[in-house]
Image (cartoon, rainbow, N blue to C red):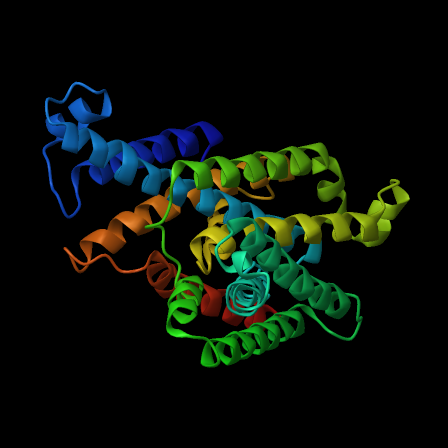
Length: 337
């Protein structure tokens, strides 16, 4: 266990190192002096300034925003479902969002309303509807008393498999252009991150943070059980509905713009819970979110370096990091039970 001051101090140092290395390293490598001159518009080479401000910083901020959104979504799901394995990826929300995005591209894009395949707003709506359908399944399964926490995760695996199969079916009947656009959503990739997407995603992150901070006390009460929370006047079922809707929306926004990036929503909250014993939900949500953003920034930097000069999709790296943690938590819970 460490103090909160120590946590923020070391996380700030780690974030600054990632920031500096991200500016420096890439297909076009430059010195730290060149990168910081370009950052502050002091570079005599306009190409370096363009590289920093139009490519590297937007990609880095995209990584932070997406990581923060997914980590917040995961922390909310783990709290309201009281399941440490819950996350947008393990419960099928991300896969549902990817199906919705693919549906907008392939079906609506090839129908009379052809603009849908090229209009990001329709893709976001499709992703949200897909994630919402997944969350409704999760909500239904979570209310069945005979289904325990592990059973809920198995239900999430089934939901994810269903939406993966549905997405592949859509891809099978798509043309080459639609297939190329839809496949992007099956790989988590930050290369298309632009300033408009960053503003959009960060706005929803701020809305999500406002919601959880506003309802932080309610989240604290359900830790002690639904009956205890109800005795204190908390409308538990309503809270779960709102929380699942917000989690679905956050997962949909991230997936619609950047594809499926798995396990960030699982990893970040668990690190916080390992570092701090029984953290209050105000701190849990905020710290998990910031840590998730920094974690995905680091993962994206690593994705550029592993097979340099080739950049692999960051979703592949997060899956490699998340699967061992998922199995560890599952085995630990099985041994405890």
